[in-house]
Length: 495
Image (cartoon, rainbow, N blue to C red; front, side):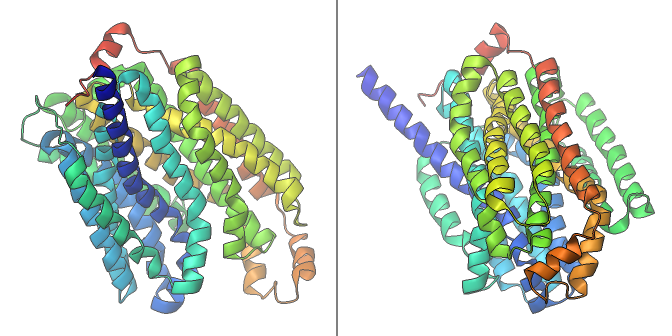
């Protein structure tokens, strides 16, 4: 009977994992899938300056909402937060699809992002109690693999949807998946919360935490448009940092803080978040530069560049579940360090291999596969090292902290890579504006051959170095959880 009960519990655990992974897949997908539709949306709605916020507003609201969402999930219930987030995300998706104007679309994207911020930490907090502590790393690896699949599917699926059904289908496609997950989740998921937490939330912390993170991410993400020395950029980041400092001070003094600062006394949490920021800086920079190279220098179409990029994320999604087993056997720090070596080597070799003459099979694809393995080893290991060994009452908060750190890293990475590569991007943009591709691929290559590509290549080199630093810091800072911490991380999964 014990074996039957164990098998039944294991089956339920993986069903919960699969259900929550659908939701996190949609949130990740909605970041990359929309990028391919920018030009089409501009042609339909106009206002290109406003439409830049279709992408920025989502990232800002998502990053800002995560910390508060983690605490609300712990206090009022993870299941409730997950289903409410799904509902908001589906409402936001419907509003995006129906948007009559650019401003309406931006506001609808904010609704989407707030829903995504609510469901993300709650989803992992629902999954982890279903698994014994020795299997949580593997579960998180599978959960993280869905994010890799979303990255793989986003550009190509988005291009196909835009070409066949129009840009509004990018948002409407979320609705049936959200409806299915809500209906099944209401019956399957068990409610859980931090029973020791007061049912009161410290709203001054909500205001300072949300606004502070939002302003920091705003300043970083808009630095490309405003410039790093612009008063709006510097002022936004400065005020944001002051508010974040006030938020931390508040959390250190109130009885029931929005963020449990004791998390920062855990070396595995600190290591995962520091490395996570750097990994996100390098990852988004690498992804942006790869796409830029394919679409500008090699003049690939949106759909073709999406298909060309897909092998890397597919390899990452395939490797990620196995990374969990490797992390439990050899240690999280060592697996992440191995991933950082592959990412660094793949990025350096890619920068040294490409030229203005397209050579996908020899100069691009091999290094995409190498970096794909590196991402697969890294992405799930970062998540599991940040959350797998926490106490059950800290699951949502720990997940929210880790995701917030990586969102800030993503904003910084995009701004950094675009800033370094700016001279090349400006020169190529001027050629495109002058109709440089009109005379065919050979004439275009001759034009691009006269452009100084060194800034773009240097941006790749910087990202490669950042990956290596992330791996080294993980080795230096990470410490295996103590016996006491491991004992505290066990939870009864029998319900």
